Image (cartoon, rainbow, N blue to C red; front, top):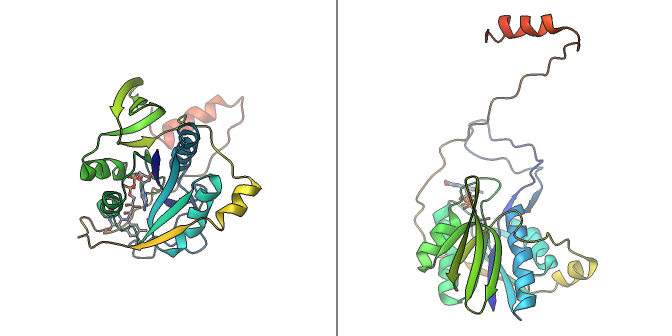
Length: 245
Ligand SMILES: Cc1cc2nc3c(=O)[nH]c(=O)nc-3n(C[C@H](O)[C@H](O)[C@H](O)COP(=O)(O)OP(=O)(O)OC[C@H]3O[C@@H](n4cnc5c(N)ncnc54)[C@H](O)[C@@H]3O)c2cc1C
């Protein structure tokens, strides 16, 4: 079984996010980039499935050379090889089109993504990719088992889950609980340095969307402490400052 895992390189979730003064560009200087957490879950699942079904795991990233440390981490977790499409990921359609172009020339039995990237949170690449490849897509997959050419997935829905059956090949977006996270061990880290990482050039794709500007949420106001026995002060603040009552 040949499994492809799509991985994105995202700012560390604890990173301080800043934009240029005109709010048009994200300032990457000083920011640590990590493997998107949902992709890490999908990759962990892929490694387990490959072990169960005598398969292989390839990871693919659309990004420039700065994403290579994140790709090497995926190799350390257990992917067999990696592909980097050499382009800045300009929008979700651009990313989906690059991956679909690669897959149409190099078929896979299963394509796993994360349910969303933790930076732009679009949840759009997996569905666009599936559409471009003419494959089914299950976006919020919490579990996945494969028997022959049929897979069963638990998918999150509001307030519960649905159980779906789908034939291979298909695209799934991995969610929390899909697999136990795999921490790279020393052997994995050492072998990641020599595993194959192929760089392919991007295909021409017209950019469908263009960022105009970013807008950060308002900074939170400072916490005001009130003595535990001073309910009067609390009511006064709610009435005078917040004007709720
Ligand atoms: C310099 C720069 C300029 C940008 N300009 C624009 C712009 O003009 N318009 C715009 O809309 N966006 C822009 N972006 C955002 C960028 O397009 C998104 O980060 C990217 O497309 C992922 O989109 P998403 O949030 O929809 O991913 P999601 O759909 O939320 O990601 C879901 C899954 O898709 C896969 N995936 C996502 N990204 C990649 C990737 N790069 N490689 C492989 N797999 C991936 C992963 O499995 C991920 O878990 C820009 C980003 C950068 C760095």
